[in-house]
Amino acid sequence: MWPDMSLSYVFWHRPRPGADIDEYESALRAFHARLAVAGIPGFTTSWTVRLPSVPWLDARPGYEDRYLVADFTALGVLNEAAVAAPQKAVHDAAAVHTADGIAGIYRLIGGAATPTATSASWLSKPEGVTYQAFLDGVDIGAGALWQRQMTLGPTPEFQLVGGPAGTDDIEIAPL
Image (cartoon, rainbow, N blue to C red):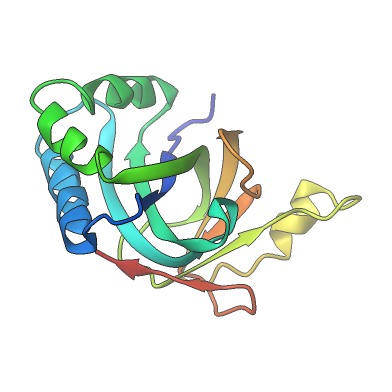
């Protein structure tokens, strides 16, 4: 266990074909707003951003939801609370519009998480390079560097959100 751990459950998803995008985004905002006032132990905050392309969802447009929690115990508490009353109705209102999704659990290893970032890059540590050498070479600028802890899909090991502009950046738009 790491002291002062900050974890995020990250869920990449896209709306089902034919879904009304305004309605979908409104439902997402309502769900995150409900979580913000729910008083869930260990849960810090959450937000959604729009992505023009999600590589592991056939490079189609989609969304990234990020849920910050204190530790793995808090993640379990959030998992239960997100679909329990009184969050169930707002959760289901968003979920009914969702076609598919992929998720992962990431740990903040540098910088500060921010819901207003406008870019994201995914990085993989090259073979034969130590973690320390790799991390020493990553310029996070004013961004946040997240390292995957568990994956529930084919996502790269690192994500840099809101850091210096790079060639592999994906523009994100906070909702």
